[in-house]
Length: 311
Ligand code: UDP
Image (cartoon, rainbow, N blue to C red; front, side, top):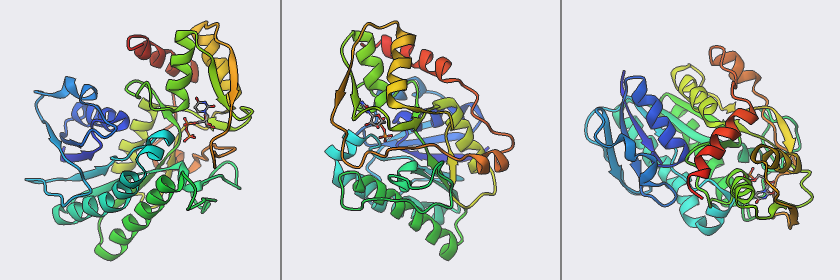
């Protein structure tokens, strides 16, 4: 089935990808330096046939022994507080790390997939966001370290495709949640779920009227697998288009957890996008009938079960 390198393989998405590739008969080389990933996410895979783990920082010269058929670059801090705390590492892994992993894909004649993001659309002026929208990004604001690194990563990926003929895929990932998110990564799902479970105030930023569209991890991972196996070279949005305000989302978590937490309002972070919803018509058309299947209630219930055991 082919051997795959997954950078950021011990992270939230990388570990779910490792599971999926192994279950579909691939060999997996999982690489992580644990800046934001955790050995706990892949502990169950150690000793499993076809699984190898390499602790490494992919912003350095990269070598992997043996054949590689696929390279998936998922290493990066990915929550706003992570990339605010680690701005230089975020820029380096999106730029140098993308360069190194593309170089490896070229050498191995492997197909390459880069994890890009809805953040390339910045604070969007077009709604919902379609792949042909170029975005509204503040390059010098605090989020610029992530947004611009990913925009650079997309440009570098297309350059390796056009100049070196590497087979490349670009997935633009919208807000995704599920098991193995870090409890304290600052993102809204772990924040609200842990606050609700502890009965602490739920911290809605701004007036809570900003919107997001949340995709359960298994739907996203299936979409990424299909994109890799498709012929689509241009960027492709993957996410769940069910949009809601953050205040509605807080109320949903409160309802599902039967929590008595009060909702409190805190200042809105700088450059926090006001609206976000993927247009997934392209993914629907090119990914062989792919469609998000897991409802918010189902996905959140599974996520709550996971967090309950960790609080
Ligand atoms: N947010 C919030 N309270 C929190 C954490 C986040 O209201 O404790 C808001 C945040 O301002 C943003 C949305 O929830 O509008 C999603 O934030 P997250 O950090 O999960 O991801 P983003 O979509 O901003 O990358």
